[in-house]
Image (cartoon, rainbow, N blue to C red):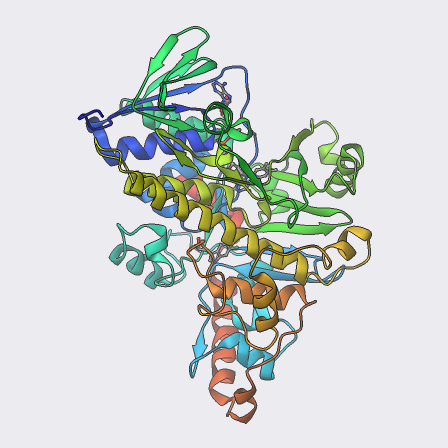
Length: 523
Ligand SMILES: Cc1cc2nc3c(=O)[nH]c(=O)nc-3n(C[C@H](O)[C@H](O)[C@H](O)COP(=O)(O)OP(=O)(O)OC[C@H]3O[C@@H](n4cnc5c(N)ncnc54)[C@H](O)[C@@H]3O)c2cc1C
Ligand SMILES: N[C@H](Cc1c[nH]c2cc(Cl)ccc12)C(=O)O
Protein backbone atom coordinates (compact mmCIF):
# COMPACT_ATOMS: atom_id res chain seq x y z
CA UNK A 1 0.00 0.00 0.00
CA UNK A 2 1.24 3.49 -0.88
CA UNK A 3 2.28 5.76 1.97
CA UNK A 4 1.71 8.84 -0.13
CA UNK A 5 -1.43 10.95 0.24
CA UNK A 6 -3.42 10.87 -3.01
CA UNK A 7 -2.72 14.31 -4.44
CA UNK A 8 -2.99 13.85 -8.23
CA UNK A 9 -6.60 14.12 -9.39
CA UNK A 10 -7.54 13.38 -13.00
CA UNK A 11 -11.04 14.41 -14.11
CA UNK A 12 -12.37 12.98 -17.37
CA UNK A 13 -15.16 15.10 -18.89
CA UNK A 14 -15.62 18.83 -19.39
CA UNK A 15 -19.36 19.31 -18.91
CA UNK A 16 -20.99 20.99 -15.90
CA UNK A 17 -19.88 18.12 -13.65
CA UNK A 18 -16.24 18.19 -14.76
CA UNK A 19 -15.74 21.93 -14.44
CA UNK A 20 -17.70 22.31 -11.20
CA UNK A 21 -15.52 19.56 -9.73
CA UNK A 22 -12.25 21.04 -11.01
CA UNK A 23 -12.96 24.56 -9.74
CA UNK A 24 -14.24 23.39 -6.33
CA UNK A 25 -11.31 21.03 -5.72
CA UNK A 26 -8.77 23.69 -6.64
CA UNK A 27 -10.45 26.19 -4.33
CA UNK A 28 -10.70 23.65 -1.50
CA UNK A 29 -7.15 22.25 -1.67
CA UNK A 30 -5.13 24.85 -3.62
CA UNK A 31 -1.59 23.69 -4.41
CA UNK A 32 -1.88 20.69 -2.07
CA UNK A 33 -3.21 18.75 -5.07
CA UNK A 34 -2.73 18.79 -8.84
CA UNK A 35 -5.87 18.68 -10.96
CA UNK A 36 -5.91 17.66 -14.62
CA UNK A 37 -9.11 17.77 -16.66
CA UNK A 38 -9.32 15.86 -19.94
CA UNK A 39 -12.27 16.50 -22.22
CA UNK A 40 -12.97 15.27 -25.69
CA UNK A 41 -13.06 17.88 -28.43
CA UNK A 42 -15.36 15.60 -30.42
CA UNK A 43 -17.85 14.18 -27.92
CA UNK A 44 -20.14 17.04 -26.99
CA UNK A 45 -21.64 17.82 -23.60
CA UNK A 46 -25.31 17.02 -22.98
CA UNK A 47 -26.16 20.66 -23.79
CA UNK A 48 -29.01 21.06 -21.28
CA UNK A 49 -29.18 21.64 -17.51
CA UNK A 50 -30.11 25.22 -16.85
CA UNK A 51 -32.27 25.33 -13.68
CA UNK A 52 -30.97 24.81 -10.15
CA UNK A 53 -31.72 24.55 -6.44
CA UNK A 54 -31.22 27.63 -4.25
CA UNK A 55 -28.38 25.80 -2.49
CA UNK A 56 -26.21 26.34 -5.57
CA UNK A 57 -25.42 29.79 -4.20
CA UNK A 58 -23.14 28.10 -1.64
CA UNK A 59 -21.09 26.81 -4.58
CA UNK A 60 -20.61 30.31 -6.00
CA UNK A 61 -19.92 31.71 -2.51
CA UNK A 62 -17.30 29.01 -1.96
CA UNK A 63 -15.54 30.11 -5.15
CA UNK A 64 -15.86 33.78 -4.04
CA UNK A 65 -17.90 34.61 -7.14
CA UNK A 66 -20.38 37.49 -6.94
CA UNK A 67 -23.69 37.49 -8.84
CA UNK A 68 -22.65 40.71 -10.65
CA UNK A 69 -19.60 38.86 -12.01
CA UNK A 70 -20.85 35.47 -13.12
CA UNK A 71 -24.57 36.03 -13.82
CA UNK A 72 -24.25 38.37 -16.85
CA UNK A 73 -21.50 36.12 -18.25
CA UNK A 74 -23.86 33.13 -18.14
CA UNK A 75 -27.09 34.92 -19.20
CA UNK A 76 -28.42 33.92 -15.79
CA UNK A 77 -31.77 34.83 -14.23
CA UNK A 78 -33.54 34.18 -10.93
CA UNK A 79 -35.78 31.21 -10.22
CA UNK A 80 -38.26 31.69 -7.37
CA UNK A 81 -40.19 28.46 -7.90
CA UNK A 82 -41.20 25.70 -10.26
CA UNK A 83 -44.59 26.47 -11.78
CA UNK A 84 -46.56 23.30 -12.51
CA UNK A 85 -48.98 23.99 -15.33
CA UNK A 86 -51.86 21.59 -16.22
CA UNK A 87 -50.79 18.79 -13.84
CA UNK A 88 -54.11 18.75 -11.97
CA UNK A 89 -56.19 19.64 -15.03
CA UNK A 90 -55.70 21.82 -18.10
CA UNK A 91 -55.72 25.51 -17.14
CA UNK A 92 -54.69 24.93 -13.51
CA UNK A 93 -51.33 25.94 -12.10
CA UNK A 94 -49.51 25.93 -8.78
CA UNK A 95 -46.02 26.78 -7.54
CA UNK A 96 -43.36 24.92 -5.61
CA UNK A 97 -41.52 27.98 -4.25
CA UNK A 98 -38.31 28.61 -2.38
CA UNK A 99 -39.89 29.75 0.88
CA UNK A 100 -40.10 28.17 4.27
CA UNK A 101 -43.59 27.17 5.36
CA UNK A 102 -44.91 29.42 8.16
CA UNK A 103 -46.05 27.59 11.28
CA UNK A 104 -49.01 28.69 13.40
CA UNK A 105 -49.49 27.23 16.89
CA UNK A 106 -47.32 24.26 15.96
CA UNK A 107 -49.07 23.40 12.68
CA UNK A 108 -47.90 24.30 9.17
CA UNK A 109 -49.97 26.99 7.53
CA UNK A 110 -51.04 24.55 4.80
CA UNK A 111 -52.74 22.46 7.51
CA UNK A 112 -54.77 25.52 8.58
CA UNK A 113 -55.41 26.20 4.90
CA UNK A 114 -56.94 22.73 4.50
CA UNK A 115 -59.11 23.44 7.54
CA UNK A 116 -60.21 26.94 6.55
CA UNK A 117 -58.19 28.54 3.75
CA UNK A 118 -59.20 31.96 2.42
CA UNK A 119 -59.16 30.87 -1.29
CA UNK A 120 -58.76 27.66 -3.28
CA UNK A 121 -55.05 28.45 -3.94
CA UNK A 122 -52.85 26.94 -1.22
CA UNK A 123 -49.74 28.41 -2.85
CA UNK A 124 -50.73 32.08 -3.06
CA UNK A 125 -52.46 31.87 0.36
CA UNK A 126 -49.43 30.35 2.13
CA UNK A 127 -46.37 31.70 0.25
CA UNK A 128 -45.35 35.25 -0.66
CA UNK A 129 -43.14 33.91 -3.45
CA UNK A 130 -46.09 32.35 -5.29
CA UNK A 131 -47.64 35.83 -5.55
CA UNK A 132 -44.35 37.33 -6.78
CA UNK A 133 -44.22 34.60 -9.43
CA UNK A 134 -47.74 35.33 -10.66
CA UNK A 135 -46.73 39.02 -10.86
CA UNK A 136 -43.33 38.34 -12.55
CA UNK A 137 -41.33 40.17 -9.90
CA UNK A 138 -37.61 40.06 -9.07
CA UNK A 139 -36.65 39.07 -5.50
CA UNK A 140 -34.25 42.03 -5.39
CA UNK A 141 -34.83 45.77 -5.64
CA UNK A 142 -33.00 47.79 -8.29
CA UNK A 143 -30.31 48.78 -5.75
CA UNK A 144 -29.53 45.06 -5.33
CA UNK A 145 -31.09 44.67 -1.87
CA UNK A 146 -32.97 41.46 -1.18
CA UNK A 147 -36.72 41.38 -0.36
CA UNK A 148 -35.93 40.26 3.15
CA UNK A 149 -32.44 41.04 4.43
CA UNK A 150 -32.90 38.35 7.09
CA UNK A 151 -32.07 35.78 4.42
CA UNK A 152 -28.74 37.39 3.61
CA UNK A 153 -27.74 37.78 7.27
CA UNK A 154 -28.85 34.24 8.07
CA UNK A 155 -26.81 32.95 5.16
CA UNK A 156 -23.66 34.64 6.51
CA UNK A 157 -24.07 33.14 9.96
CA UNK A 158 -24.40 29.71 8.42
CA UNK A 159 -21.68 29.98 5.80
CA UNK A 160 -19.23 27.08 5.75
CA UNK A 161 -21.91 24.43 6.24
CA UNK A 162 -22.52 21.76 3.62
CA UNK A 163 -25.95 21.63 2.02
CA UNK A 164 -27.07 18.75 4.21
CA UNK A 165 -26.05 20.66 7.33
CA UNK A 166 -28.04 23.66 6.10
CA UNK A 167 -31.36 21.95 5.60
CA UNK A 168 -34.12 23.23 7.83
CA UNK A 169 -32.00 26.10 9.17
CA UNK A 170 -32.82 28.65 6.45
CA UNK A 171 -34.56 28.72 3.10
CA UNK A 172 -32.99 31.12 0.63
CA UNK A 173 -35.71 32.68 -1.59
CA UNK A 174 -34.35 31.93 -5.04
CA UNK A 175 -32.20 29.73 -7.25
CA UNK A 176 -30.75 30.46 -10.71
CA UNK A 177 -31.31 29.68 -14.36
CA UNK A 178 -28.14 29.84 -16.48
CA UNK A 179 -26.70 28.74 -19.80
CA UNK A 180 -24.85 25.53 -19.03
CA UNK A 181 -22.30 25.99 -21.83
CA UNK A 182 -21.48 29.52 -20.64
CA UNK A 183 -21.08 28.36 -17.04
CA UNK A 184 -18.68 25.61 -18.18
CA UNK A 185 -16.70 28.26 -20.10
CA UNK A 186 -16.66 30.56 -17.08
CA UNK A 187 -15.48 27.78 -14.78
CA UNK A 188 -12.86 26.68 -17.32
CA UNK A 189 -11.21 30.10 -17.03
CA UNK A 190 -11.66 30.15 -13.25
CA UNK A 191 -10.00 26.71 -12.93
CA UNK A 192 -7.18 27.12 -15.41
CA UNK A 193 -6.31 30.55 -13.93
CA UNK A 194 -5.81 28.72 -10.64
CA UNK A 195 -3.62 25.98 -12.04
CA UNK A 196 -5.95 23.26 -13.35
CA UNK A 197 -4.23 21.52 -16.25
CA UNK A 198 -6.62 21.32 -19.23
CA UNK A 199 -6.19 18.68 -21.93
CA UNK A 200 -8.43 18.40 -24.96
CA UNK A 201 -8.25 14.78 -26.00
CA UNK A 202 -10.22 11.56 -26.02
CA UNK A 203 -9.75 8.81 -23.46
CA UNK A 204 -9.46 5.60 -25.46
CA UNK A 205 -8.53 3.12 -22.79
CA UNK A 206 -8.54 2.76 -19.01
CA UNK A 207 -5.82 0.48 -17.64
CA UNK A 208 -6.35 -1.25 -14.32
CA UNK A 209 -3.72 -2.70 -12.00
CA UNK A 210 -3.86 -6.22 -10.60
CA UNK A 211 -6.20 -5.06 -7.78
CA UNK A 212 -8.68 -3.56 -10.23
CA UNK A 213 -7.74 0.05 -9.43
CA UNK A 214 -7.16 2.55 -12.24
CA UNK A 215 -3.44 2.72 -12.95
CA UNK A 216 -3.61 5.18 -15.85
CA UNK A 217 -5.78 6.28 -18.71
CA UNK A 218 -4.72 6.27 -22.34
CA UNK A 219 -5.56 9.28 -24.51
CA UNK A 220 -5.50 9.50 -28.27
CA UNK A 221 -2.92 12.29 -28.66
CA UNK A 222 -1.39 12.81 -25.21
CA UNK A 223 -0.45 9.23 -24.38
CA UNK A 224 -0.86 7.86 -20.86
CA UNK A 225 -2.06 9.97 -17.95
CA UNK A 226 -1.35 8.80 -14.43
CA UNK A 227 -3.16 9.90 -11.31
CA UNK A 228 -4.13 8.85 -7.80
CA UNK A 229 -7.84 9.62 -7.89
CA UNK A 230 -9.83 9.52 -11.14
CA UNK A 231 -13.12 11.41 -11.42
CA UNK A 232 -15.52 10.10 -14.05
CA UNK A 233 -17.50 13.06 -15.46
CA UNK A 234 -18.08 11.46 -18.88
CA UNK A 235 -21.87 11.79 -18.73
CA UNK A 236 -24.22 8.94 -19.62
CA UNK A 237 -21.25 7.04 -21.14
CA UNK A 238 -19.78 6.29 -17.70
CA UNK A 239 -16.43 5.53 -19.37
CA UNK A 240 -14.45 4.91 -16.17
CA UNK A 241 -16.89 3.74 -13.48
CA UNK A 242 -19.47 1.75 -15.44
CA UNK A 243 -17.41 0.60 -18.41
CA UNK A 244 -13.84 0.10 -17.12
CA UNK A 245 -14.64 -0.77 -13.50
CA UNK A 246 -17.88 -2.55 -14.46
CA UNK A 247 -20.02 -1.02 -11.71
CA UNK A 248 -23.63 -2.02 -12.45
CA UNK A 249 -26.31 0.58 -13.07
CA UNK A 250 -29.59 0.38 -11.12
CA UNK A 251 -32.42 1.54 -13.35
CA UNK A 252 -35.32 3.56 -11.90
CA UNK A 253 -37.41 3.11 -15.03
CA UNK A 254 -39.95 0.81 -13.41
CA UNK A 255 -41.11 3.77 -11.31
CA UNK A 256 -40.05 6.70 -13.54
CA UNK A 257 -40.64 5.72 -17.18
CA UNK A 258 -39.64 8.96 -18.94
CA UNK A 259 -36.47 8.08 -20.85
CA UNK A 260 -36.25 10.64 -23.66
CA UNK A 261 -36.18 14.36 -24.27
CA UNK A 262 -36.05 16.79 -27.15
CA UNK A 263 -34.68 20.27 -26.46
CA UNK A 264 -34.63 23.65 -28.22
CA UNK A 265 -32.77 26.87 -27.44
CA UNK A 266 -35.03 29.68 -28.64
CA UNK A 267 -33.73 33.27 -28.87
CA UNK A 268 -36.44 35.74 -27.83
CA UNK A 269 -36.78 39.47 -27.29
CA UNK A 270 -36.94 39.43 -23.50
CA UNK A 271 -37.52 43.18 -23.24
CA UNK A 272 -40.77 42.71 -25.17
CA UNK A 273 -41.82 39.41 -23.56
CA UNK A 274 -40.48 39.84 -20.04
CA UNK A 275 -38.67 37.18 -18.00
CA UNK A 276 -40.71 34.86 -15.82
CA UNK A 277 -39.00 34.33 -12.45
CA UNK A 278 -39.67 30.58 -12.45
CA UNK A 279 -39.06 27.32 -14.28
CA UNK A 280 -42.28 26.06 -15.84
CA UNK A 281 -43.19 22.37 -16.19
CA UNK A 282 -46.26 22.03 -18.43
CA UNK A 283 -47.93 18.61 -18.48
CA UNK A 284 -48.40 17.09 -21.94
CA UNK A 285 -50.12 13.95 -23.27
CA UNK A 286 -47.06 11.75 -22.67
CA UNK A 287 -44.80 13.75 -20.35
CA UNK A 288 -44.12 17.43 -19.77
CA UNK A 289 -42.38 20.44 -21.30
CA UNK A 290 -39.86 22.58 -19.42
CA UNK A 291 -39.53 26.32 -20.08
CA UNK A 292 -36.49 28.03 -18.59
CA UNK A 293 -36.16 31.79 -19.13
CA UNK A 294 -32.61 33.07 -19.60
CA UNK A 295 -31.44 36.56 -20.49
CA UNK A 296 -31.90 36.52 -24.27
CA UNK A 297 -33.46 33.13 -24.87
CA UNK A 298 -35.55 30.37 -23.39
CA UNK A 299 -34.41 26.79 -22.97
CA UNK A 300 -37.28 24.41 -23.56
CA UNK A 301 -37.76 20.68 -24.03
CA UNK A 302 -40.27 17.85 -23.97
CA UNK A 303 -39.47 15.02 -21.52
CA UNK A 304 -41.40 11.89 -22.49
CA UNK A 305 -41.51 8.12 -22.42
CA UNK A 306 -40.69 6.53 -25.76
CA UNK A 307 -43.17 3.74 -25.02
CA UNK A 308 -45.91 6.36 -25.42
CA UNK A 309 -44.55 8.83 -27.96
CA UNK A 310 -42.15 8.89 -30.90
CA UNK A 311 -39.31 11.44 -31.12
CA UNK A 312 -40.93 12.97 -34.22
CA UNK A 313 -44.26 13.49 -32.41
CA UNK A 314 -42.45 14.91 -29.39
CA UNK A 315 -40.55 17.41 -31.54
CA UNK A 316 -43.71 18.41 -33.40
CA UNK A 317 -45.58 19.00 -30.13
CA UNK A 318 -42.69 21.01 -28.70
CA UNK A 319 -42.46 23.22 -31.79
CA UNK A 320 -46.22 23.87 -31.68
CA UNK A 321 -45.95 24.70 -27.97
CA UNK A 322 -43.16 27.24 -28.54
CA UNK A 323 -44.54 28.85 -31.70
CA UNK A 324 -42.91 30.41 -34.80
CA UNK A 325 -39.79 31.66 -32.98
CA UNK A 326 -38.52 28.06 -32.90
CA UNK A 327 -38.90 27.47 -36.65
CA UNK A 328 -35.20 27.88 -37.50
CA UNK A 329 -33.84 26.27 -34.33
CA UNK A 330 -32.28 22.81 -34.47
CA UNK A 331 -33.65 20.21 -32.06
CA UNK A 332 -31.42 18.21 -29.70
CA UNK A 333 -32.80 14.66 -29.17
CA UNK A 334 -31.56 12.99 -25.98
CA UNK A 335 -31.87 9.44 -24.60
CA UNK A 336 -31.76 9.54 -20.81
CA UNK A 337 -30.28 6.88 -18.55
CA UNK A 338 -32.55 6.99 -15.48
CA UNK A 339 -31.21 5.55 -12.24
CA UNK A 340 -27.94 5.39 -10.37
CA UNK A 341 -24.74 3.43 -10.26
CA UNK A 342 -24.72 0.73 -7.58
CA UNK A 343 -21.71 2.54 -6.08
CA UNK A 344 -20.56 5.97 -7.23
CA UNK A 345 -17.08 5.53 -5.73
CA UNK A 346 -15.20 2.30 -6.38
CA UNK A 347 -11.49 1.91 -5.55
CA UNK A 348 -9.80 5.08 -6.86
CA UNK A 349 -12.62 6.13 -9.20
CA UNK A 350 -15.52 8.41 -8.27
CA UNK A 351 -18.26 9.29 -10.75
CA UNK A 352 -19.95 12.69 -10.58
CA UNK A 353 -22.83 14.00 -12.71
CA UNK A 354 -24.66 11.91 -15.28
CA UNK A 355 -21.97 9.20 -15.01
CA UNK A 356 -23.05 8.66 -11.40
CA UNK A 357 -26.80 8.80 -11.97
CA UNK A 358 -29.73 10.89 -13.11
CA UNK A 359 -33.46 11.28 -12.69
CA UNK A 360 -35.63 13.20 -15.12
CA UNK A 361 -35.21 16.97 -14.70
CA UNK A 362 -38.70 17.69 -13.31
CA UNK A 363 -37.34 19.34 -10.15
CA UNK A 364 -33.96 20.42 -11.61
CA UNK A 365 -31.94 18.03 -9.45
CA UNK A 366 -29.00 17.22 -11.81
CA UNK A 367 -26.76 20.11 -10.77
CA UNK A 368 -27.83 19.68 -7.16
CA UNK A 369 -26.59 16.04 -7.35
CA UNK A 370 -23.26 17.31 -8.71
CA UNK A 371 -22.89 19.97 -6.02
CA UNK A 372 -23.78 17.48 -3.28
CA UNK A 373 -21.36 14.88 -4.67
CA UNK A 374 -18.50 17.39 -4.77
CA UNK A 375 -19.13 18.50 -1.18
CA UNK A 376 -19.20 14.87 -0.08
CA UNK A 377 -16.07 14.02 -2.10
CA UNK A 378 -14.16 16.74 -0.26
CA UNK A 379 -15.58 15.50 3.04
CA UNK A 380 -14.57 11.91 2.20
CA UNK A 381 -11.26 12.68 0.46
CA UNK A 382 -8.92 9.74 1.11
CA UNK A 383 -5.60 9.68 2.95
CA UNK A 384 -2.68 7.38 2.15
CA UNK A 385 -4.53 4.36 3.58
CA UNK A 386 -7.57 4.79 1.27
CA UNK A 387 -9.91 3.71 4.05
CA UNK A 388 -12.82 1.72 2.55
CA UNK A 389 -15.06 3.14 5.29
CA UNK A 390 -14.82 6.59 3.69
CA UNK A 391 -15.98 5.21 0.34
CA UNK A 392 -18.77 3.28 2.02
CA UNK A 393 -20.02 6.39 3.77
CA UNK A 394 -19.75 8.43 0.54
CA UNK A 395 -21.68 5.81 -1.41
CA UNK A 396 -24.55 5.64 1.04
CA UNK A 397 -24.85 9.43 1.09
CA UNK A 398 -25.06 9.55 -2.75
CA UNK A 399 -27.48 6.60 -2.96
CA UNK A 400 -29.77 8.18 -0.35
CA UNK A 401 -29.90 11.51 -2.15
CA UNK A 402 -30.83 9.89 -5.43
CA UNK A 403 -33.30 7.37 -3.97
CA UNK A 404 -34.97 10.17 -1.99
CA UNK A 405 -35.34 12.40 -5.04
CA UNK A 406 -36.78 9.44 -6.96
CA UNK A 407 -39.53 9.15 -4.33
CA UNK A 408 -40.25 12.85 -4.50
CA UNK A 409 -40.61 12.69 -8.29
CA UNK A 410 -42.84 9.63 -8.17
CA UNK A 411 -45.19 11.62 -5.90
CA UNK A 412 -45.70 14.13 -8.77
CA UNK A 413 -47.05 11.35 -11.00
CA UNK A 414 -49.03 9.50 -8.32
CA UNK A 415 -50.55 12.84 -7.34
CA UNK A 416 -51.30 14.27 -10.79
CA UNK A 417 -55.00 14.86 -11.35
CA UNK A 418 -54.60 14.30 -15.10
CA UNK A 419 -56.09 11.03 -16.40
CA UNK A 420 -57.02 12.04 -19.93
CA UNK A 421 -54.45 9.90 -21.81
CA UNK A 422 -53.10 6.37 -21.35
CA UNK A 423 -49.82 7.86 -20.13
CA UNK A 424 -51.53 9.65 -17.24
CA UNK A 425 -53.85 6.71 -16.47
CA UNK A 426 -50.80 4.43 -16.18
CA UNK A 427 -49.08 6.77 -13.70
CA UNK A 428 -51.57 5.63 -11.05
CA UNK A 429 -51.06 1.88 -11.47
CA UNK A 430 -47.28 1.84 -11.81
CA UNK A 431 -45.03 0.38 -9.07
CA UNK A 432 -43.76 2.85 -6.47
CA UNK A 433 -40.39 2.64 -4.66
CA UNK A 434 -40.29 0.60 -1.44
CA UNK A 435 -41.73 2.56 1.44
CA UNK A 436 -43.56 5.16 -0.61
CA UNK A 437 -46.89 3.31 -0.71
CA UNK A 438 -47.02 3.43 3.08
CA UNK A 439 -46.02 7.07 3.16
CA UNK A 440 -48.70 7.96 0.59
CA UNK A 441 -51.34 6.43 2.87
CA UNK A 442 -49.98 8.44 5.80
CA UNK A 443 -50.07 11.71 3.85
CA UNK A 444 -53.79 11.23 3.24
CA UNK A 445 -54.41 11.83 6.93
CA UNK A 446 -51.31 13.74 8.00
CA UNK A 447 -49.46 16.26 5.84
CA UNK A 448 -45.83 15.41 5.05
CA UNK A 449 -43.48 16.40 7.88
CA UNK A 450 -39.93 15.59 8.94
CA UNK A 451 -41.16 12.40 10.68
CA UNK A 452 -42.92 10.84 7.72
CA UNK A 453 -40.98 11.66 4.52
CA UNK A 454 -38.00 9.72 3.09
CA UNK A 455 -35.79 9.47 6.18
CA UNK A 456 -32.35 10.43 4.76
CA UNK A 457 -31.05 13.74 3.45
CA UNK A 458 -32.02 14.21 -0.20
CA UNK A 459 -32.22 17.98 -0.54
CA UNK A 460 -35.98 18.36 -0.31
CA UNK A 461 -37.67 19.65 2.83
CA UNK A 462 -41.09 18.35 3.95
CA UNK A 463 -42.84 21.52 2.75
CA UNK A 464 -41.81 20.62 -0.83
CA UNK A 465 -43.84 17.41 -0.47
CA UNK A 466 -46.82 19.41 0.85
CA UNK A 467 -46.72 21.64 -2.23
CA UNK A 468 -46.77 18.73 -4.65
CA UNK A 469 -49.44 16.85 -2.71
CA UNK A 470 -51.75 19.87 -2.48
CA UNK A 471 -50.99 21.14 -5.97
CA UNK A 472 -51.36 17.98 -8.04
CA UNK A 473 -54.69 17.13 -6.44
CA UNK A 474 -55.36 13.40 -7.02
CA UNK A 475 -54.34 12.26 -3.54
CA UNK A 476 -56.89 13.46 -1.00
CA UNK A 477 -55.38 15.47 1.85
CA UNK A 478 -57.19 16.65 4.95
CA UNK A 479 -56.52 18.93 7.89
CA UNK A 480 -55.31 17.49 11.18
CA UNK A 481 -58.58 16.68 13.00
CA UNK A 482 -57.69 18.74 16.08
CA UNK A 483 -57.66 21.91 13.98
CA UNK A 484 -61.43 21.50 13.64
CA UNK A 485 -61.65 22.20 17.37
CA UNK A 486 -59.14 25.07 17.34
CA UNK A 487 -59.55 28.79 16.89
CA UNK A 488 -58.39 29.71 13.38
CA UNK A 489 -57.90 33.44 14.15
CA UNK A 490 -54.08 33.23 14.40
CA UNK A 491 -53.90 31.41 11.07
CA UNK A 492 -56.10 34.03 9.44
CA UNK A 493 -53.79 36.73 10.77
CA UNK A 494 -50.90 34.92 9.03
CA UNK A 495 -52.87 34.61 5.77
CA UNK A 496 -53.58 38.36 5.95
CA UNK A 497 -49.89 39.12 6.63
CA UNK A 498 -48.87 37.10 3.54
CA UNK A 499 -51.49 38.93 1.47
CA UNK A 500 -50.31 42.35 2.70
CA UNK A 501 -46.62 41.59 2.27
CA UNK A 502 -47.25 40.22 -1.23
CA UNK A 503 -49.25 43.30 -2.25
CA UNK A 504 -46.60 45.68 -0.94
CA UNK A 505 -43.75 43.81 -2.64
CA UNK A 506 -45.57 43.56 -5.96
CA UNK A 507 -46.09 47.34 -5.86
CA UNK A 508 -42.45 48.13 -5.06
CA UNK A 509 -40.24 45.45 -6.70
CA UNK A 510 -39.02 45.72 -10.30
CA UNK A 511 -39.95 43.15 -12.90
CA UNK A 512 -37.37 40.41 -13.45
CA UNK A 513 -36.41 41.88 -16.83
CA UNK A 514 -35.93 45.38 -15.36
CA UNK A 515 -33.71 43.97 -12.63
CA UNK A 516 -31.37 42.12 -14.99
CA UNK A 517 -31.22 44.94 -17.52
CA UNK A 518 -30.08 47.22 -14.68
CA UNK A 519 -27.62 44.62 -13.31
CA UNK A 520 -25.97 44.56 -16.74
CA UNK A 521 -25.65 48.33 -16.69
CA UNK A 522 -24.07 48.18 -13.23
CA UNK A 523 -21.57 45.40 -13.96
C1 LIG B 1 -33.08 16.57 -20.79
C2 LIG B 1 -32.26 17.00 -19.63
C3 LIG B 1 -32.56 18.18 -18.96
C4 LIG B 1 -31.82 18.57 -17.85
N1 LIG B 1 -32.16 19.69 -17.16
C5 LIG B 1 -31.52 19.99 -16.02
C6 LIG B 1 -31.86 21.13 -15.25
O1 LIG B 1 -32.71 21.93 -15.63
N2 LIG B 1 -31.23 21.32 -14.08
C7 LIG B 1 -30.25 20.49 -13.64
O2 LIG B 1 -29.75 20.69 -12.54
N3 LIG B 1 -29.86 19.45 -14.37
C8 LIG B 1 -30.46 19.18 -15.54
N4 LIG B 1 -30.05 18.12 -16.28
C9 LIG B 1 -28.85 17.39 -15.86
C10 LIG B 1 -27.62 18.17 -16.32
O3 LIG B 1 -27.67 18.39 -17.70
C11 LIG B 1 -26.37 17.41 -15.98
O4 LIG B 1 -26.41 17.03 -14.64
C12 LIG B 1 -25.15 18.27 -16.20
O5 LIG B 1 -25.15 18.88 -17.45
C13 LIG B 1 -23.90 17.46 -16.03
O6 LIG B 1 -23.59 16.71 -17.13
P1 LIG B 1 -22.21 15.96 -17.11
O7 LIG B 1 -21.14 16.97 -16.98
O8 LIG B 1 -22.29 14.88 -16.13
O9 LIG B 1 -22.17 15.27 -18.56
P2 LIG B 1 -21.99 15.87 -20.02
O10 LIG B 1 -22.51 17.25 -20.16
O11 LIG B 1 -22.58 14.84 -20.93
O12 LIG B 1 -20.42 15.93 -20.25
C14 LIG B 1 -19.67 14.78 -20.53
C15 LIG B 1 -18.24 15.19 -20.85
O13 LIG B 1 -17.47 14.01 -20.95
C16 LIG B 1 -16.64 14.09 -22.08
N5 LIG B 1 -16.32 12.74 -22.51
C17 LIG B 1 -17.16 11.68 -22.71
N6 LIG B 1 -16.46 10.60 -23.10
C18 LIG B 1 -15.15 10.98 -23.13
C19 LIG B 1 -13.94 10.32 -23.45
N7 LIG B 1 -13.90 9.04 -23.84
N8 LIG B 1 -12.78 11.02 -23.40
C20 LIG B 1 -12.76 12.33 -23.01
N9 LIG B 1 -13.89 12.99 -22.69
C21 LIG B 1 -15.05 12.33 -22.75
C22 LIG B 1 -17.43 14.90 -23.09
O14 LIG B 1 -16.60 15.48 -24.06
C23 LIG B 1 -18.05 15.93 -22.15
O15 LIG B 1 -17.12 16.98 -21.96
C24 LIG B 1 -30.74 17.75 -17.42
C25 LIG B 1 -30.41 16.60 -18.12
C26 LIG B 1 -31.16 16.21 -19.21
C27 LIG B 1 -30.80 14.95 -19.92
N1 LIG C 1 -32.34 22.40 -0.62
C1 LIG C 1 -33.40 23.28 -0.90
C2 LIG C 1 -34.45 22.45 -1.56
C3 LIG C 1 -35.68 23.22 -1.88
C4 LIG C 1 -36.46 23.91 -1.03
N2 LIG C 1 -37.47 24.48 -1.73
C5 LIG C 1 -37.35 24.16 -3.01
C6 LIG C 1 -38.08 24.54 -4.10
C7 LIG C 1 -37.70 24.06 -5.31
CL1 LIG C 1 -38.59 24.54 -6.68
C8 LIG C 1 -36.61 23.23 -5.45
C9 LIG C 1 -35.86 22.87 -4.36
C10 LIG C 1 -36.23 23.34 -3.13
C11 LIG C 1 -32.96 24.47 -1.74
O1 LIG C 1 -32.08 24.34 -2.58
O2 LIG C 1 -33.48 25.55 -1.53
